[in-house]
Image (cartoon, rainbow, N blue to C red; front, side, top):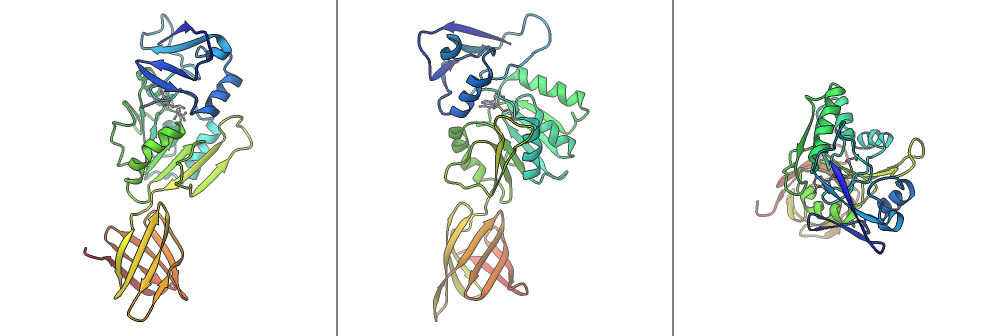
Length: 306
Ligand SMILES: C[S@@+](CC[C@H](N)C(=O)[O-])C[C@H]1O[C@@H](n2cnc3c(N)ncnc32)[C@H](O)[C@@H]1O
């Protein structure tokens, strides 16, 4: 791969690649990071180096492919997640050997390879074919190429709906574009993002590294919530639920009274709420829910009309 640079007169907020505008301004933190640390990188923005650079796919004249931190990517530049944060992100996801992890924009493959070393089936989707080849070589060298696989593709076109864990290090507007796709994944799927959030979908958990990490040291986790908004019949009473991501609210009504639910929350397919003195805990399974009240008495609910 080569990087071609053309002189520019002023500091650009955006670089153009293949007729597409690549926004750096929305990834302001990334931009600042690059300004601080990548003075010698080839993708130096005009304010620093007087050039805007566009990636081309021609192979390097000699030697193995060497990626450059800050090199352009399709929708976002390549900046690797610090290994210490990769480790914490997988801890945050509570990754197990039974998981199928997908890293969206997998770069040099470090998250996928680390997940595979923990026994999970891990897969990277990366637009840059040179990075895909590099990641495959690294997986081979680390002895995990059977569990760590990579494909060249666009994260907005490849189907990754069977993943149980999704990791990403993109930009805020890309996270928002992915959000509806992520919310349609199976309840309980864990999403872990380096640095950037999901707008008003609040994270279920966060971590911040204070050691072995100088930039991009935060990560957040979201658990895809089951879809429960609507009317349910709960043991002969009407349960009306509203939902905003993992937050739920509502009422339980019978002939005698209508009572609000309190302390209500979804964690994947697990639901809990309190009505009066009764603490409901249960599991959502499509159009059915079931569980126990106050730890012993069973309850069940069916979606009205189901
Ligand atoms: C900030 S880097 C993160 C790399 C890796 N996930 C990590 O955490 O080390 C983002 C990666 O996404 C890739 N990328 C950008 N847009 C993409 C797209 N639409 N589809 C697939 N990969 C993309 C870039 O080439 C780059 O390798």
